[in-house]
Image (cartoon, rainbow, N blue to C red; front, top):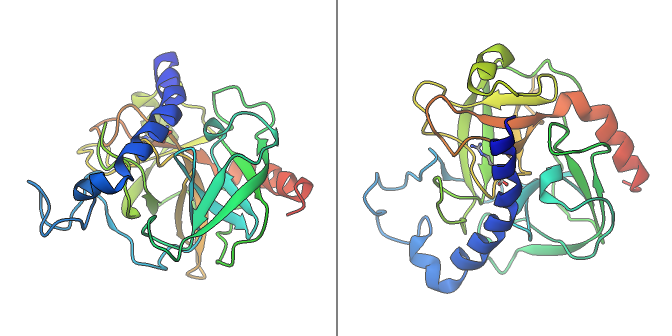
Length: 271
Ligand code: ARG
């Protein structure tokens, strides 16, 4: 990825926290999806970045992290997220994972604190954008298996998150979901010459834009059904130039490439 883009990615984690602090406060409720009877100027019920609200229980493995990122349950007490969402490895009791709800303000939300963070070994801001967060106790929700190779890197993927619903938009109270098509590396390289092929995977509507993950979705999963009709995680929200711009797809950590490393790391956390 380009240096400018990388810088953009680095600063967004902090920006996402600020946005979260704003838009999740009760006073911002009117800006939230479903908060009004029709929606502002757009089509009713359709959010930006092409998303729509997820059903309660539809993606039970989704986790919201307190630093303003997404994540997924790799095991019931280990969250898979992005390396750029965390600050190195080691003991860390400062992260809270919220799970079990689409509405972050639902009183049924399960909140569990972290005990340890493991950032991808050798992570330097380019590629390898994955990390694990060990939780102090298990969360009683289904986990999301990760792809073991690149055989599912095709077709349409599901993305979901509580991040911004448009470029520079507010963080969301309700989980949004959307579908984005796979983009092959050669095509994606024309948008992003510094794409780390083999470590990064692109998805989005290249011609039109309009559907994408955005700031605050980082660390969350990109997933699809396998041949057995089960959800499998193929990507981790990593970066992009703006959000949902034509010609600028979303870039995701290629989970299949790192599956063995991720499993080994999870074992080392006692997962
Ligand atoms: N880096 C962003 C974050 O920290 C995610 C950006 C994803 N951007 C995109 N256009 N798909 O939340």
